[in-house]
Image (cartoon, rainbow, N blue to C red; front, side, top):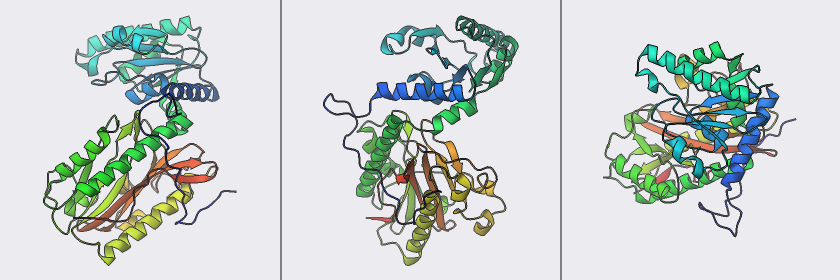
Length: 417
């Protein structure tokens, strides 16, 4: 039996009782505990899938498994071999392998990584380098007595996949395992997302105070970015669209002038704290109160999205939530693919798009189970194409008692000068 909520009764999480930064006199976000919880969650997921180790590349996967940030200017510059029953082995990029170990004492095993820098040395050199890479991985598997066990592989290109397939006993896809692990957030991960949500609330408040007609959208975005970076966000994003650029998603950052009478929406999606991404949209009216029609668009949109959120209860599935989104044909489209990322709920975490996904494109036919600990951003839009568009996005955590809202800034149309 799942619990349902009426559209107006989705509760908020309690507000944070602390800000960013560490102290010794109050329990706040504990990075060491964050790392420990994620590693244990990853080990548990490997065991559930009958996998003894995973080899993972990419900034989000590697950070999840190790708590490290590395160079990301090219794919596969560094990677991690993560066994289910022993300590991870980090293959670090040249230079980093010398300097990082003293700064990250929780990682005990370090090796130098092999890379072919997106293929720039040419095919023959890439094949050679990938073969050496695979030999290094095989050596570590032998040390761990795992050489004859299946190895899950996530985030690598074709050169790596081919080389590993030739030298390892058995390789299996690993991306789904990583996504499964990352879908259920630990308590410290939820705290990171709550902090990211609080930072975006601060950004919206600063934007509402500072925005006025005559400014450019770039100037307004800078106000938001300053409000986020000054309190410890490790990445800040802000952008706005209005008029013909507001439907569906026109280009942003055009330095357009904000003029009296504008109805515009902004997003701060990708603003992050300790790597955890917020996803948030809000709508503003410039120099006037919103019209009755615009208020109607927003009320319909709020009702729709809160309906989606009300279905995000443990033991439910994403098909029930997806039915609250409008059918593509009812919005004038031929197929649901034309609404991808526009009318959607999607997991948020170290990746900006994680499991689960809620939309009519996939969820009705391929539903996913909703589980306690999932964190989801739910977004949509309403209005007249190219003329009057409202847009909002809520951040939600699934608790044992049902969904709760993370971000608190009002979702009504905000009037600015």
